[in-house]
Length: 335
Ligand SMILES: [Zn+2]
Image (cartoon, rainbow, N blue to C red; front, side, top):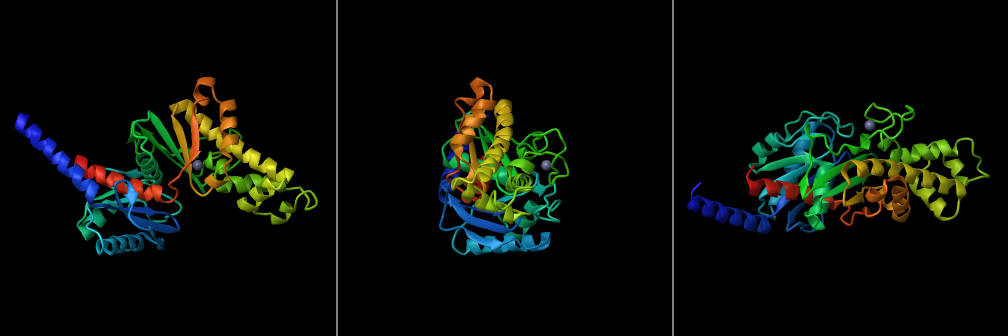
């Protein structure tokens, strides 16, 4: 390569970077129940994210995505679109290759190809937990850290692994499927994936409720008023009762923390990360001091002691920011 081509490339990269900083990409977070979206510039969302219910069926979802993009274009000149979706995503083709129970019929849809042809904009599609992890790392300026693991603790458990600012996707785009780490060998609880004893069958919201149900069975209303809430005791009621001193509720909450700890410890020993960032609907019920104590107790000394575990400060917008940032990066790098 000649010197002049080098400097032209350098100038080109500078212009790309400037455009990336000035022109937003639309970040879209496609979930099982709702779709959130917002234009993203300089690692921040512009305005309040828009939220609409997720329609049923792949064709209707695609129509809704196109409508959201066209709406955003009325107010912004978009440089591209980043879509975060549940399921294992082939990020080269922009297609969901692993099915997701929350979005029936979505697997196999060539999302990138369809949306690009209907909008004329460059589109990047990624897994939702990976996008959220990327959003967290970018927003918090953690791109120099050796390893950051973002854990989405919701109805299930998702994860994203970022090494030196880059997503680790694995050999088959399935890295970060941490909700399906095996945490028990007794074939005790069936997971939604069809396997037994996955981490999310214990540590996610569904797991919390299953634990509460087990521990409240054969308990009378005299022992705890929570017994009246069977067969499906709500997480917030159990956590509130624990804070008010209900001993059985406290045992349920302690057991759930031990279950959350089990997956963290396995990941800590595998990856030795700088920190875990916890997000998702269940993250507000975590006692981070207690979790840290449990993790230190179960980890080898060098791994656990300096490990940082904290709650996400971005919440819902992490996926939107991450999806848009990955899309912008692909435009700058040109791959
Ligand atoms: Zn599973």
